[in-house]
Length: 227
Image (cartoon, rainbow, N blue to C red):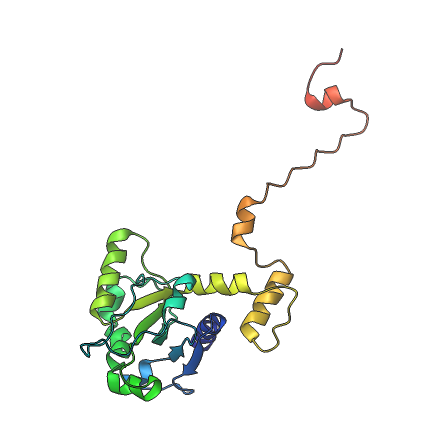
């Protein structure tokens, strides 16, 4: 499942113009901090920030929401990404307390390790891709605060990734170079996937009138007395 999820994440970032470098092709039995990073992503179309200000200080990162949508990606020039495809799990406070390894990739994204890929003095965001955060506000806010305290700059929920891939995939195109997009296209072709925004405004189907039984008049069918 992790390989499928990582492929979806890669398609998502490539769809939005990112160059994606996978950290490794093997599964580490005891991954080091550096191996917790799944992808390095670089967006050449993003607005390039100066490497340093007049006083030599590193530039401030542009303000973005902590929970990212597809529309927010244009403001990210480069980032390290960790994918945690626990699709049956809601990432509430208890999950983070019992699984501290979730934060290891943020700890490993040091200037030295990231500099080997992006070069020195380049601001890099640390993005965690997870299944979903809690829906209720207290638990959701606690989760966000724990993630920020763990050094994570932003999260992307899988629902945003799937929604974007579904909207992008067209039925009349053959995606032979992408297994993920081709499967989505086939499911759409056979009406196993519906566009939710279209279904919302589609009028309800009218029921066809019941056929009249032979030998009875319309009055008899309605239960009204005959004249």
